[in-house]
Length: 247
Image (cartoon, rainbow, N blue to C red; front, side):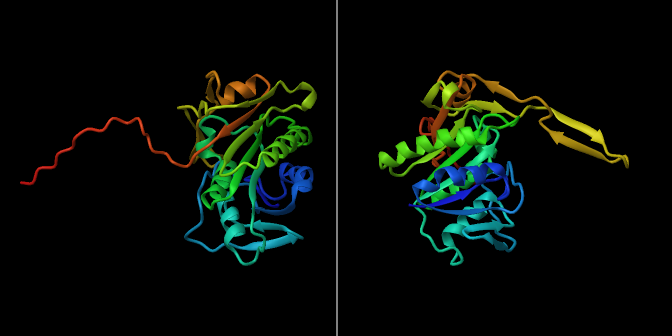
């Protein structure tokens, strides 16, 4: 297999390096990741400015763009040769559950791969405090081995790992997307020069613990695997007549 690894924390992030080490047994690894941290950039791509890409070392490239830029560039540029069979985005430093999916650069990068017809996985760790990347990478490698053995086709998965190893893991659950809000508070302060600035969300991060959701599974010590789609159509929406009258 030819596997593309990317992230939104930057190519120097520990999560991406550890992920590479644990999954290199499954195929040829190419890393194409942002030059700098690009968290919460969602699925943005750079259409109005040029991108620069430098080969940091063999099969490791840094792009001065966004996570989705990296995936698009890796797939379409003549600079990077392999035709990829799988895109893995992560391991992200912190969970991407519930409404995080809409904001996450980690998920956005995986979605970009899926839109190009490549099986894609976003992988995140459920704790930003002292993340145990090696333990989580070991768990993920077991999950990936099972996915490969099943010869799965056409998938886009969001995987969140509890910050623990195999010995204390409760298990693995397939889940639905939960609900997490970034709060309704705007914190307003002044800088040393007296100019006002603002923080969106403040500290009011709220979770809804819905049975069967990614949030519920992660809080209970389970790995959460949420299958995602890119079709946002609300098929249950009730249609109604709209009349336009010409004068």
